[in-house]
Image (cartoon, rainbow, N blue to C red; front, side, top):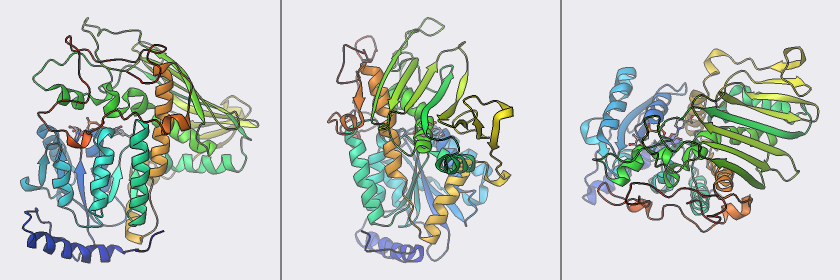
Amino acid sequence: MNPVQPTRREFIRTSSRFAAVSALAGIALPHVHAQGTDVLQVALIGCGGRGAGAASNALSVNTGPVKLVAMADVFAPRLTTAYDALKRKHAASVDVPEDRKFIGFDAYKGAMDCLRPGDIAIFTTPLAFRWVHFAYAIAKKLNVFMEKPLTADGPTSRRMIKLAEDATAQNLKVGVGLMSRHSRALQELHQRIGDGAIGDITLMRGYRMAGPLASAFSEPNPGPLTDLMYQVRRFHSFIWLSGGCYSDFYIHHIDHLCWMKNAWPVKAQGIGGRHYRQSPAGKPYIDQNFDSYAVEYTFADGAKLMMNGRCVTGSANMYYSHAQGTKGMAVVSKQGDCGLPSSIYSGQLPAIERRLWESVVPPDQQNPYQNEWNALTRAIRHNTPFNEVKRGVEASVATSMGRFAAHTGQEITWDQFYNSPTELAPGVDQLNLDGPSPLLPDADGRYPIPEPGLKRDREY
Ligand SMILES: NC(=O)c1ccc[n+]([C@@H]2O[C@H](COP(=O)([O-])OP(=O)(O)OC[C@H]3O[C@@H](n4cnc5c(N)ncnc54)[C@H](O)[C@@H]3O)[C@@H](O)[C@H]2O)c1
């Protein structure tokens, strides 16, 4: 139930009250003067590659003016690099003076305190911090765009579902960076599959197989960073921060294939391992990832989704997704996470002579990252329902249960994973720049790794 449906203008009026109350309370908040205009203000929390990209998408929407007014990160140089790049590209829409740049694990509060209710906070840190930042945004009545994945364990998944309900109850709009859902090609394909174009889906396959990516493989911390800051810097290597490479890299295929099926899997089992635990230069890798994964998801009707992931240099590069049905098959993502075009074939091979349909997308709608921002800001300005968090959590759970199955060597059901009591990083809301990490290395700088069959009810 949602008893209060404030419009954007009401949000802006409320913001004047909020600033006055804050001043009366003697709280020194950096003040942003935009009341009475239609400018949507955004704050960027997590100023890395995707953060700069998401902020740029925010400043390029086709729905009305947007301004970047505050930024937060735990590494000052990251913030500076993103600021410089955004200022170069969007000079007129970037207004972030020094007193609205915040550094530290509580920097998110400073950045969100610069916004008025109804503005937008962008969360592009590693996933470990999503629930902490989301809870604060809801308390400040902010709309949110948050990147995938949202969670890596049961307790934070349940917490995020509860927060999603709170956000909806406050009429906040929340976008989640599962951009496949905003691909025009995949939207039309989903519609056509729903209309029976390939019959009943019986098998889906996702492949993301390439060399090691981003910070998936890590050598021992060479210093001077603390263990905590080294882990944050190389977050794809650590399960508590990112869900590891499985969650971070494979969630897009898992999400959009489940969408094509209109269902989430009921259970998963899988295999995986690490062939190479040394860098080409002979240094040990100390991260928690496998380099190969093959996970089989089962749906309630017995249909299967096979997710294949590999980070091995010199092996075949395969990066696409297919869905197979009783009447034909579909190329969902031709290349990459959701690359154009999508297509449908009679029979089980994507043979050109059997092609029944291929997507055609107008140039101004070909970028799903831009489409998702246009959709979010349109919903804010028109006050229409928009909250993608529930399905973002569900996609994260589906992904994490596959990772858990491969890491433990056990079959696991959705319910078992979702209801699991094991929280990977309790107290993540209390971290500070000089403090310890929730994950400690041994004397040689190595971290605990999955050992399927030996560690059966936890991943490491
Ligand atoms: N949708 C997509 O296609 C897509 C693509 C890339 C990344 N992502 C997602 O975006 C997120 C960020 O990925 P990235 O590639 O930009 O990584 P990145 O390392 O380039 O950026 C992350 C930034 O967050 C900062 N940070 C870490 N913890 C923080 C905290 N507690 N408070 C404030 N700042 C903090 C880091 O210092 C860094 O600058 C990840 O969840 C990733 O999965 C999504």
